[in-house]
Image (cartoon, rainbow, N blue to C red; front, side, top):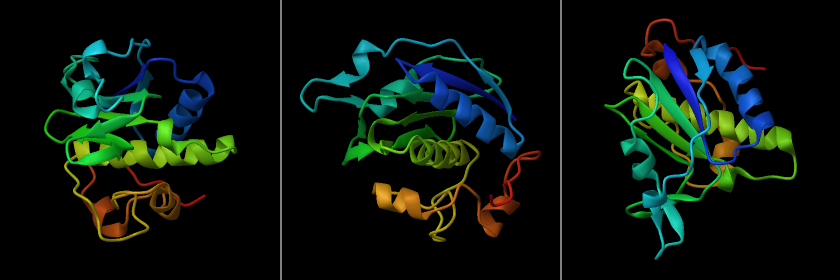
Length: 171
């Protein structure tokens, strides 16, 4: 599966490099696109955050690939004060923000970013939220829930991954 990794705004290169290396374990055909500016129209001045849906409406990447936008701005969607990320299940588009994944340990930030990116990619492949709290497709409403789950798909979710995609072994 071809995935374009798209930095939107100033995303630390080290984070993108680590994310790219980690995503290769899922057997993705991954390539990094050129950095794009944060679109002005996605900012909501009333909430002082950025609408996640606005990132998904943009025409970034190629039509024949999934694109995964990574940004540092705070995201929200209607009905939720914030989201770590959001995906368009029918359009092959996803966005994840590192804003609420912060930690003093850069390895923790990288692990959180990987989990949230794989989770949103899972949605683009048609997966819904999973009841297994260790599965990467389990819904995270807090950073503690993100930390508690793994970056792997449970056995049930792994069986319905697109052809060629794998759930890598535990570290």
